[in-house]
Image 1 (cartoon, rainbow, N blue to C red):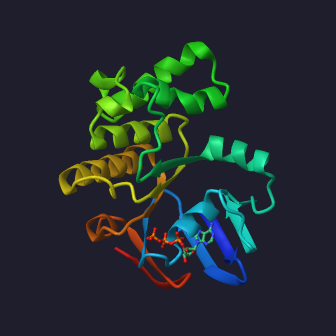
Image 2: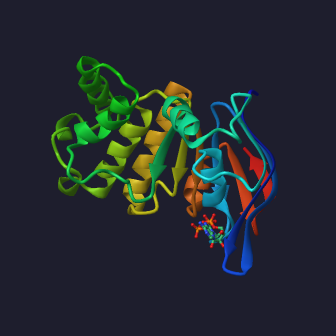
Amino acid sequence: MEEIIQLKDVSQHFKMGDSIVRALSHINLDIYAKELTALVGPSGSGKSTLLNVVGGLTKPTEGEVFIYNTNVTHYTEDQMCFFRRDHIGFIFQSFNLNSTLTALENVTMPLIFSRIPNKDREKMASEALDLVGLKDRKDHKPGQLSGGQQQRVSVARAIVNKPKIILCDEPTGNLDSKTGKEILELIKEMNRIHQITFIIVTHDSNVANQCQRRIWIQDGKICKDERN
Ligand SMILES: Nc1ncnc2c1ncn2[C@@H]1O[C@H](COP(=O)(O)OP(=O)(O)OP(=O)(O)O)[C@@H](O)[C@H]1O
């Protein structure tokens, strides 16, 4: 199995006034390409912090992060932005869509940042929306879509640049169980057909159990690592 992400002795501390919150402590972790990996654990255990460190949204206090064997730990913010743009997609619990833009325009946003020529953007965004089953909703704004449809738009936005890694923070957390299952099926399809590596932070044991690998975090440490 090919390691696509490696964390070497990663710790993350936050200073809060006079005290220090040790969100992650000495994490060593390899994430394998094309796998669905779930990060599970109690609230406050460090799951989102770990995801943010992998995505370069938070710089670790100690340790190193390798993605595609590239040490990205000391990348500047700009370098990390470009790296993320080309390699990493994100899906959030609260969708994080721009409410003033249509579904198509939301999905087009990463392509503008990637300097994809104007003439190609709409076609690519439109194809991504087709893939997530929103052929008929391209001109709708987020407020005119159901929660599940909004999350489909964020899946389309995450895949439109064809990244090989997608990081999901509670992707089904704001959805009822039926819609959550549909979004999970979509994620599994993207994993299977497009060979995308997913890391999914989840509280939902149904989501975790359908991932090939489950990593339990407690008090900022990995306490169990299990695969099917
Ligand atoms: N920016 C920050 N500043 C200070 N403390 C932080 C910051 N981000 C996270 N923490 C703290 O780090 C710890 C881990 O937080 P994190 O959000 O990673 O947990 P989590 O497992 O994702 O929790 P949840 O399941 O509730 O989302 C918590 O104690 C949290 O309060």
